[in-house]
Image (tube, rainbow, N blue to C red):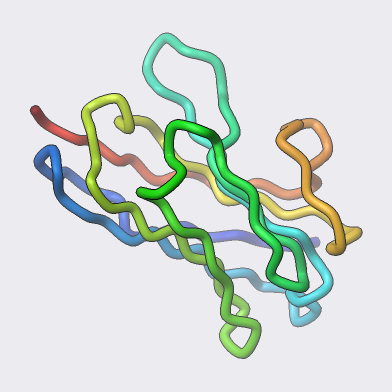
Length: 124
């Protein structure tokens, strides 16, 4: 069982930055593909970014060039650097993990583990 704990959310003005972190309990963290999803008020859950065990990445079109996903295998931690934030980025952000770390997907049903979520609020 993998436990994921997010941190780093908060309130920021438009144009600001935040860095989300996700600490994983599993010592075999490096074997998992990881990612971030978000859910805005009144909207469906949506894919934000993903990274394979080898470091290949994929992003939702609207965050490309603004967000960067990365991972530190030595710390079993996943990150999401968010720059140039806009009010539309306001949501609860969830860290996810799946076995089979060599490929990623934007399908939330294929991720085995989810964190509890961290709130990101961008004011205009």
